[in-house]
Amino acid sequence: MAYENLLYEKKDKIGYITFNRPKVLNALNRKTMEELGHLLSQAREDAEVRVLILTGAGEKAFVAGADINELAQRNAVDGKEFSIFGQGVLHQLETLGKPSLAAINGFALGGGCELALACTIRLASKTAKLGQPEVRLGIIPGYGGSQRLARLCGKGVAHELCLTGEMISAEEALRIGLVNHIHEPAELMPAAEALAKKIIANAPLAVKYAMEAIEHGMEMSQEEGLFLEATLFGLCCATEDMREGTRAFLEKRPAQFKGK
Image 1 (cartoon, one colour):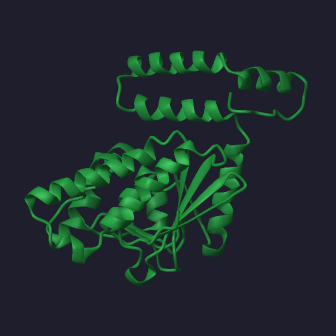
Image 2: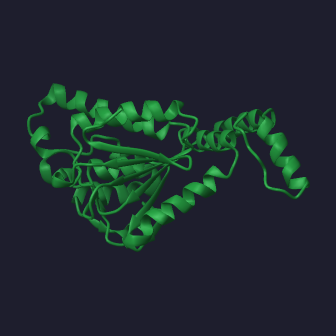
Image 3: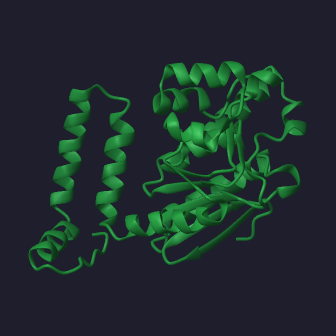
């Protein structure tokens, strides 16, 4: 399917999603979010895709935020609906069962920062700027930023970024744990691809269950999380991939995983 605001290609088991509205710094509007939801549904069922890499078209922005022209028309009723819809799409990304890497190549503000937060791992160009500037528009984050940012970086960091609305550098984002790695601009996509290939080399079901243990366990007590981990560990022990992985280790050869 051809998308109006997204570019999508597949190569070497990686799905590349590029937000393609460079004239407005790839700002998110309703159409873009609808297309993203559709694309994620397709990627979930596509056995040829093991990892997604998300980035922005052009050299200035990953996603610079929401489309302000569209946002300015919201009232209390459709504003809440718009927030819930966007939250649903990003929840779909977060719970896809396949890792997603945000290659943050420029501005990641507002909805763009929230999009990155919903990804599994974040890599940023040294020129990237991140932030939640919604209070400067008289609103608050609406796509999960207040929740994921606090869980990822702590309540103090979330308060500071959401209450001041200030942008931070890639270096500061790395220091507070908002991004995992920073790279020179020309090295960002190669680094994301290299990380994706490391993940792809591992057992697909083990990767999926490890993600589930982390994502769901974060919302549980430690005791409940440990029980979930043990349950998912048991499921892994029943897979063909577990047999292949342990056998390959003992035979000192690369494992050939099949996702079964």
